[in-house]
Amino acid sequence: MNIGIIGAGHIGSALAVRLTSLGHSVYIANSRGPETLTDLAQKTGATPMPAREAARHGEIIVVTIPLKSIPDLPKDLFEGVSAEVPIIDTSNYYPLLRDGQLPELETSDLTESEWVQQHLGRPVLKVFNNIFAAHLENNGQPAGTPGRIALLVAGDDATTKQKAMALVEELGFDAVDGGSLHESWRQQPGSPLYCTDLPAAEVQQHLASLGTQRTPEQHAQFLANQEASEKQLQAQGVKL
Image 1: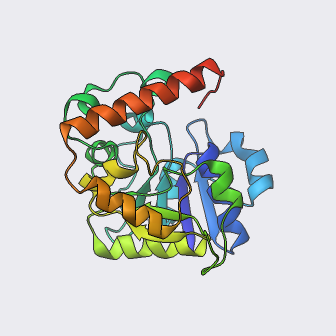
Image 2 (image 1 turned 135 degrees about the vertical axis):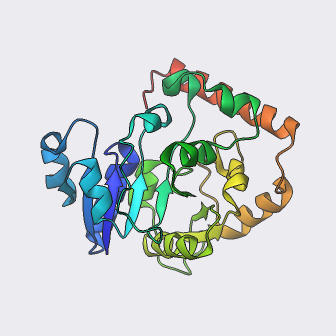
Image 3 (image 1 turned 180 degrees about the vertical axis):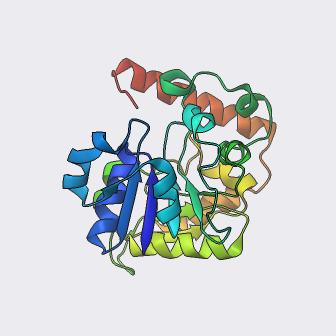
């Protein structure tokens, strides 16, 4: 399969390594141009390209850049790309460490990926945002392995969601349907399902406990959890 990756950071690089090892053809782009991706290409086997070309080559497209940079993507990025091609968003909102304040995500019921979808002008799926890049690259296991990590796939189109879930399974993780894109708040930072590497049964238990409609109290609690986590990372000098 041809897979286009827009973004060559931690998650993009981890996906490039794993996907090429599985025999997929990976086309990867960043904001600085393909000539800056020589080392990554040698490490991963991915082919560097401008963003528009990577998108046009993909049977699945992964957008994995800082949330604040989403509005800077080319407006014609997906021109000529079939509506049947799944577009995966991996972004997370980090106001302290990276993104600055985005009031729409703090004062409304909009989820991160709904915000991304609005800016891209194309339906997206929320996947690969709630696992550490090193775990995504190294911790996949064969189906049926006890304790196999489960990853959520949230989105509104059943066909593209099934394609994304199949890719998750191929990478060595149990794919769990995370509901609609509006329900993807359950896998955002601050959630008990964010970077906790739980097996499918525990993920399902948390989904049932959280419900489908985010309450104001849950929203406030997740934002507080996220702020505390970011402050801890900030104190440790972590950069995203």
